[in-house]
Length: 293
Picture 1 (tube, rainbow, N blue to C red):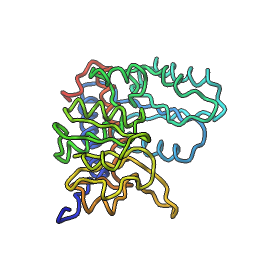
Picture 2: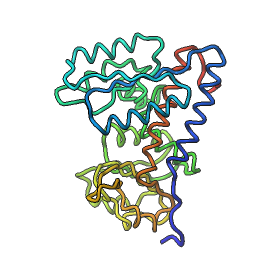
Picture 3: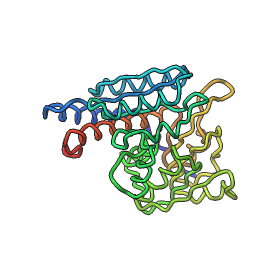
């Protein structure tokens, strides 16, 4: 066991640094005479969690110098009308990033809507062509939460090369894309799920554990190899109403070398990477190299 507590990977502070970098790049883009990044969020229905998340995105994007808009549609909007809204945004040159807030209300086919997104504007990295791009290692938008996991590790000098990364969860939002991004950085990756035998034993072999399955405090302290890095992507509401992650934070932090808290860990990084993706989309759409700004 470590002699000291794990280093806390502060997602709020790290995301603030990413957002500051994006804001500086936006200023440089606008100084060339280009339009500022335009981000439009499509929000269907009145889901309270989605409402809060969209407000946070709007505020962060506005602070970074974006032009932000939210298209609000009723929960009973026809599928065809929703798809027409997305296609209209695809054709709007002032809009560089389009984000369809998920989950959609019952009765709407999210896959069909995402399929309509222009991959160049798909700043969530979820459309079929976006998936093909990140799977094949081609240029394009990477999903924001997995990209946030990579970013927080890199900004805390925790490179993945040569590391054994164990990802608990195989969703298209986190597990599968993160496995691909980690492989691209020369990590050895194991993806676990509900059928994995001896999950605790697999986790104990990890240099990096990423918990993204939606089960409160699933990963116990004795599942963590001393000195390992632990990224907790889970956001669950405990019996006392407080947010808890997929990791038993108190126990794991006694063993891990580094760990993200919940809240204040990976969550803020997701929005920061959304802004980064949207800036890159805006720069490329206007003939600029985002890496040069």
